Length: 114
Length: 114
Image 1 (cartoon, rainbow over the protein chains, first blue to last red):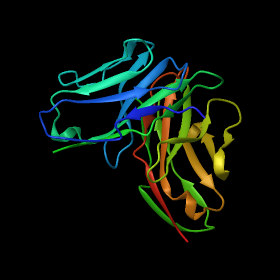
Image 2: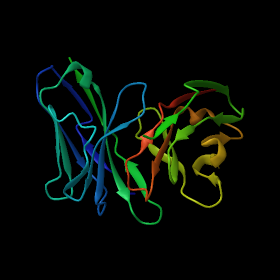
Image 3: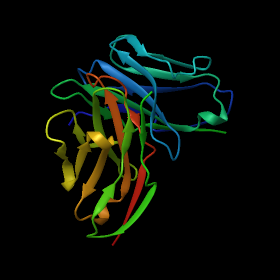
Image 4: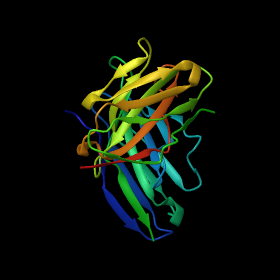
C-alpha cells in the first residue's frame, strides 16, 4: 500500500538554527498539505499545495517558515530561525481524489528546539 | 471559521465496554466529517468518513459514527472495545468539495485496560 514518506522522523536543533523537513506524497496525489501538531492538540494547517502552487498559506508564519513544491511532487518545509515554540510534530498529508476525497498522512517529523 | 470540539480528553475503559466519543462541529455549509486514529508510535489513519447519504457510517475495526445534522454532531461508537483500541482519536471536518484542509478537534486519548 502506497504511503506518504517524511524525513527526518526526529530532529533536535537549537533555537536560531535552520531546519528543513521533506515530504514525498503518494504517487499521483496533486494536493499536498503540511500540518503542525502541538502536543495535546489536533493538527493545524500550515500550508496547502495544488501541484506546485500554494493554495492556502494563511496560517503559515511567513517571517520564519517557508514551503516549496518546485516540481509539484515532493515538498520541503523550512524554519529559519527556529524558536522554542516551534517544538511540535510536523505532518504531511496528500489527497486521494479517487472516489470521496480523503487525506492520507505521513509518519511526521518530531521537532525539538532547545 | 469552522471549529471542532471533542469534549472527552481522556477516556479509560475496560475491555468489552462500549465506547462513545463525542464530536461537535461548527461550520456554516456542507460538511464532510472524519474520524482519524493515531495508535502509539504510528501515523494518523482514517477510521471512517461521512460525505453524504446514510448518516450512520461504518468504518474499520468495528467502529461506526452517526452524523446528526440538527445537533452538529458526529459521535464515534464501538460496542465492545479491545486493548488494541488504545490510541488517540481525532474528529475532523472540512467543507465543500473535500479538497480543503481539515480542521481537527483536540483529540481524545482512549486507554483500554485488559
